[in-house]
Amino acid sequence: MTKNLMCRVLTVSQQDEPLELEYYLLTTEGVADTYGIQVRMHWRGVWESAQYRYVTMSYDRMTELIELLSRASVTPTSLGEVLQDIL
Image (cartoon, rainbow, N blue to C red):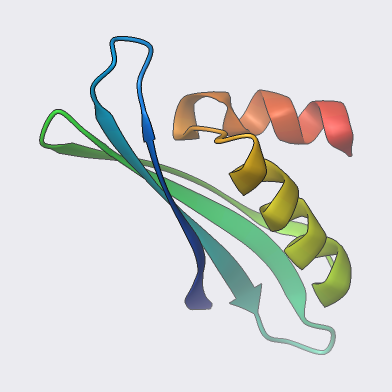
């Protein structure tokens, strides 16, 4: 599996504290490549992370999803629920 940083978002939390989000494209190579996402969040000095592999076999679809999720500042906590809603 390879991991490539696609986007970094600097925003503020609901408590008006700095919040950094990183969105990674995960690629699992095989007979047919599959793509997934990892979201990392840095808040209050702690990193939190969530990832979902094997989301799609379409590179273009996965990069569109990453763009959408980063514009909405989706966090690791809500990543699974948001992916379920949009897929």
